[in-house]
Image (cartoon, rainbow, N blue to C red; front, side, top):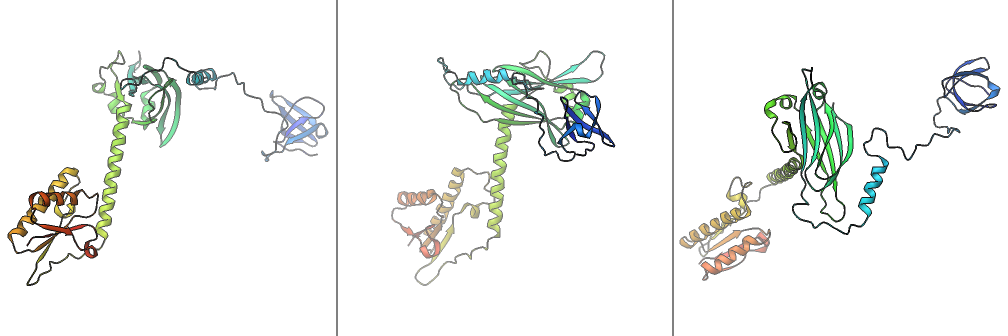
Length: 365
């Protein structure tokens, strides 16, 4: 059997093995796990894994991780995880009564400027604050060059604060934002909350300006304190409003692109004249995006009354009010007004062939 540099081998007549570092004639120089280089004849070696074929399975078992040892660089040990699991699964005879006070979230981000002795620059301590009755699992990451980089993961008790990390001014210049993920829970019965994902945009000039450092209820020092819960709610409202506006714009564009229906011309004859009035709000006002449902109804009913009164004073014999189908509210209001204020007038659904179910015809004369 031949061997080449990079082959993983075991000694035939001895314990252990290693990696072939160089080959001279039929002698391979094997570097062991201890770093020693041992010469061995080809006949004294067994090839375990060939260089360049990492998929071959090694006969040497990988060392098993110690299950009792905490995960490196992680603030949550196995014992802490087991303790949390125990707390969440055990019965709680003294279950807390759910109230508006103990089921409200209040999570904050605190940034404290710290000037070290003998240093001109300022360091910034970043804290997370849980000012509520919920416990929290969190991750803290930074965004640099448009990539998210994990910085810390941890667990917080209710009504506590924790120092997450400290940044120098030089480090902050390379960071675009802080990204914080929070998951909330309680022991026993509680009102669940959706996880929060919050991103704080890093503004060096604003953070270094003492005018932005304020007295607060959480630190003895002046600090920048941001309410993550409130900001997340505002972002969600803004997102929903934007989605609604986008949908309205798309619908408006689609409607503008549709071929416009030819307006029904009044039918005139020696015996009868018919007038048509479209009560759709877009036909009555240029912009109705800021109007409430009640305000829209008032405008439509005002147009209905003006048109009907004009028909009563003029020569119109029949008037068709196009109100659409919708939820039927406008049609109901028209019928109610006719019954109450104009009991002598007859009315009925307009021609189904022309208007479907979306119009009411009033016989004026």
